[in-house]
Amino acid sequence: MRALTYERASDPVRAAAAGATAGAKLICGGTNLLDLMKLGIEQPSHLVDVSRLPLKDIEATADGGLRIGALADNATLAADVRLRERYGAVSQALLAGASAQLRNKASTAGNLLQRTRCLYFYDTLARCNKRSPGQGCAALGGINRNHAILGASDACIATHPSDMAVAMIALDASVEMIDARGATRTVSIHDLYLEPGSTPHIETVVRPGELITAVVMPPPPRGRQLYRKVRDRASYEFALVSVAAIVSVENGTIDSARVAFGGVAHKPWRALEAEAVLRGRPATIDTYRAAADAALARAVGRGHNDFKIELAKRTLIATLDHAARGLA
Image (cartoon, rainbow, N blue to C red):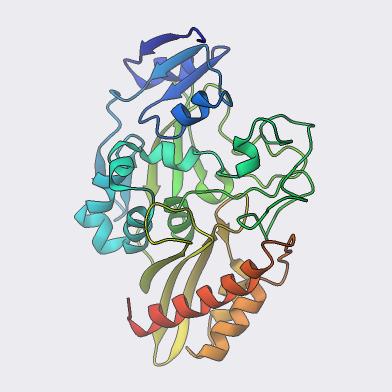
C-alpha cells in the first residue's frame, strides 16, 4: 500500500498553492484520477480535495453568455435550462458521455482535464511516451483502432476522450484559472489543449500550481446546434468519431457554420477548413461532402483506424444535413 496525505482545500488560492507542491494532485469527483491511481499510473503523495470549494455556480454573464463553475457536476450542467436552450450541443455532448452515475460525480474542470483512454497508456507493461516520456509508442504498430487520424505525431497517436470539450470548442468557450499568488488568466479552450509533438505528456497549457475556476461560454452564435457521437455501443462508451456542428441557413445558403470533431485527435479538433468551405455555399449534400473532404484532407490512418477517415466524413455530412434541416 502506498502512503499519502490528504487535505480539504478551503479556498481556490490555497488549493492552487497546495496543488503546486511536489507530489500533490487535485481531486474533485475522482472519476478518472482514482482509476489511474489504482493502476499505478498516477502516484500522488498528497491529495488536495477541491470538491467543497465554492465553484459550482452556473451564472448568466452581462454580455448574454454563461459562466460555469469549474466544480459544477456534469449531470447538473446538462440539465441546466439555460444550457439546454442556448448551448444545446454542450448539453447533448454531456448526456452522450459516460454513465448517469459518473455524470453525477464528474466535474466540469475534471471533464476537460481527463486523460486519454488509450489502452497502451493504461497498460503499464506497454511502451507509452505519454505515461513515460522517451519510452516509445506501442500504439503505432499495435491495435490502434480507436486512435488519432488528425494532428498525431510519431511520439503519440492517443485521442482526447471528452465529449463536452468538443462542443465547447465549437462554441468558442474560454477557461478561467487562478494561481497560487491569486493571479488570474483566461485561455481560449482552443488554446487550452496541445498537439502531442514530441512531448505528449504535456497535454494542456495549465501550469503547475494553477486551478481552473470556471468555463465561460460567449453568447451563442446563430444557427442550430447538434452533437452526434458514433461509438461501438449505445451506452457508456467513448467516441470513435463525434461531431459538434452549429449551422445557420438563410434562403438555402449557409451564412455561418462551426464544426469540431471528437475521437480523432489528441485534442478536441476544430475543423476550420470545413467551416471555410461551408460559408456562403448552398446547404446541400455536395457542399457538406466538400467540407468533409477539406476537414479530413490531412488525416492519416495507422492501419486499424483507417476506417475512421471515412467514418468522420460521413458523420460530418449527416450532422450538417440534420442541423441545417432542423432534424434530430
